[in-house]
Amino acid sequence: MDGIGDGGFNREDLDLGAMLWARGVDYLTGWRDATQAAAELGDALTAAGVDTSGTKLRAATDPNGSGVVRLELSAATAREVAMLARVTAARWCEAG
Image 1 (cartoon, rainbow, N blue to C red):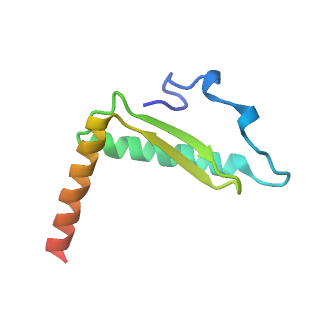
Image 2: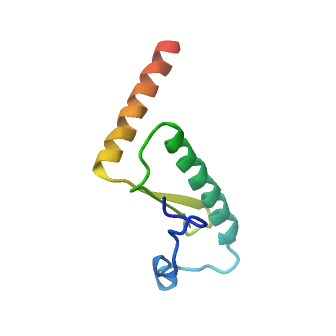
């Protein structure tokens, strides 16, 4: 995973010039929320048995300050996650 605290985060990933900052918008709260959500998603993927070695999860904010999680997967990992989602959806439909 690529995130704060795991050694994968570095200053080169941060492009302050590409961001538009609006006065009065609380970007930090959204970023903190996204950081927590990214960690939760990473834990869930790992618990589901997904190989997360090439997975990147990045916390960010959108222009209004809401948290955003950016997920980058290899094609093989994306197919694995899609299969897990389909299996889970089928189980929910059977139970309902």
